[in-house]
Image 1 (spheres, rainbow, N blue to C red):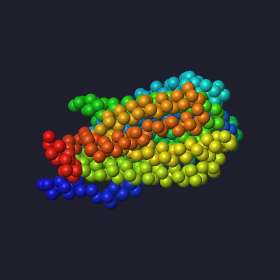
Image 2 (cartoon, rainbow, N blue to C red; image 1 turned 135 degrees about the vertical axis):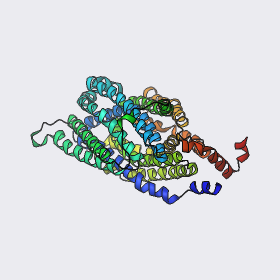
Image 3 (cartoon, helix red, strand yellow; image 1 turned 180 degrees about the horizontal axis):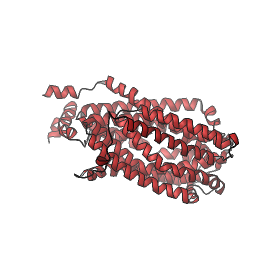
Image 4 (cartoon, helix red, strand yellow; image 1 turned 30 degrees about the vertical axis):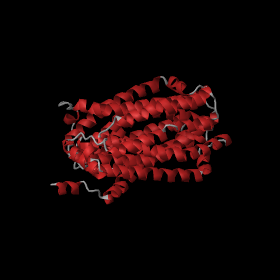
Amino acid sequence: MRGKALKKNQVDWSVFFKAVVTIALPIALQNFLSTTASMVDTIMIGSQGELSVAAVGICSQISSLFFSCYFGFAGGSLLFFSQYWGAGNHKGINKTFGISMTCMLAVALIFAVTATTSPGFLLGIYTDKQNIIQVGIPYIRIVGFAYPLQVFAVLISFLMRSTERVKAPLISSILALITNFILNWILIYGRFGMPKMGAAGAAVGTLVSGIVNLIVLLTFLLRDKNTLVLKLREMFAWGDGFLKIYLNKCFPIICNELFYGIGQMLINVVIGRQNESAIAAMAAFRVLEGFVFAFFGGLADASSVVVGKEVGAGHHMKGYQYVKGFALLCPAITFCICAIGLTFNAPLLRLFGLGAEAMFYGKYMIMIYLAAGTIRTCNYIMNSCYRAGGESIFGTVLEIVCLFTISVPATWIAGMVLHLPFLAVFAFLYTDELIRLVFEVYYTRTGKWVKPVTEEGKAAVQQFREELAESRGLKKAVEN
């Protein structure tokens, strides 16, 4: 029996790299395409001048806050999806989808109503420059209608990724990107007799491309009857204490994302009080940062699927070893991408129509991110794996405490009190990452983040603890 257990937990690194190729790369490409859509908006609007770039950048910060408010439910759903998929529990996947969809749509409706009815109020939170606000109002008002579509599409994408169907989200992203590009070209510049709408035209492109994305995803989801079938009755069967279990696991993730979003909002308030060139440079940087996130975000999602599947099936040692593999691979890839971006910073930044001062800012922002982004990636991937393993508290507490005791105060004092140069203010955004890294590396090695929600996973926890302790010569400590 012992030999069989060891065999099932034996790590096959070929499986790890196969997951990287078959799951992570398509997800990364999908994220890349989503980021490209944002870049297309910013580049095309760049022809209208720095003011338009800055306005769209501020609107993107509002969308980022919206993302933080609903992503806690999406992240929680990924935990349950992956573990239930590993255990073959389709009913559990259905219930998770129903709860997550209800909560995420509620958040989307709140933001959609606010963005469409009070766009000036939202923009005024982030910047005090009325010329930027006036350009941004029509953009955010139109984009607000896309918010409910976005959460539904994200949830379906997460479901399909967790059940190892990564082609459909990739195809939907390609079609959405093409739609966005064509409509931007027509509406921003007023082609084919259409009115020249500027930033508002880009917003229409975003809205319509979101509709296309959702339609394609739904088509793939409903046509595939072999992998998993969503059943309305099971989606809302939240009895047997499942709702409590779901909320217990999701609540820390929701708090993590919500407070992280609030922290980033406070930081963005500081950025929004800088000069217009700095705001425009920040808008361009956020798009370039999105490309980095596209790759390591894809790896993070893949790690969640792979680790969650192993933990859910009771193969904890495999999941433990895979976490260490991802924690080394992701920062290495991030460093390489940032190094390439730094090498070609001038042609990249020129795409956004930036002036000389904004170009100067952009170059050194990429240089700072070369170090900070690499560390940040390592922290992000480990926290994603904790969640996939069932532990959602440690990473949440660590991230929020560090954010609000280090990064936010440091950035606020630098920008609002001391009025330091913009690049100095920017550098303070990442002051908490190194401290988090020390704690997360230690916690990853302990294996205490393995806390399965499936019966198969729970039954194998004690054996995993013993194997881990034995591998370190700490068996007596565990027994005590």
